[in-house]
Amino acid sequence: MEYDKSVLMNHSLAAMNELLKLAMIDEPLWVRSLDGSVETLNVEEYARSFTQFNCMKSRDFRTDGTRASRRMINNGLTLMEILMDKNLWMEMFPCIIGKTSTVDVISTSIGGSKSGILQLINTELQMISDLVSVREITFLRYCHQYAKDIWVIVDVSVDMINKGAQQCEIRNCLRLPSGCVVQDLLNGYSKDSVG
Image (cartoon, rainbow, N blue to C red):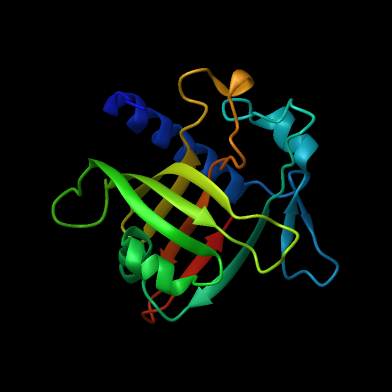
């Protein structure tokens, strides 16, 4: 399927803005687990608050989301390099990421950094369970240096672009805006918020 590159860039920028809002808002959008280690998305609140990517009207559509923050040994740039390289990404998550290909590079980096790269990716997501089938998904991955010490990487499905979110056709999986916000710390580590 052919897409206008400016449409793909606008779709990715809107997804990045949504991801940043998701990272900043707490209750009632996110519900903390009893042990406090992870937060779960309140799907009803998400549907009320975010409409651009809301494709949840279908009764067959199941939505879930979690977020967590952790300190990582790597700095933001190193993590961006891993996530933007399909082979390194597959190595980092071998139990989840199956066959993967970069369909197209929509936009290249700005000034030699990873910031500004937009890729169209096709991958197979797999779960360690016989109850969940492999899910093939085509999505955009956008990397942006949001501030001097803050990196954002966002993934979002392309399935809803042509028809709009309310009428999108879902093959077997749809990726709403998700990704990570990475803040470099002074000690060479980074704080990663993933959702």
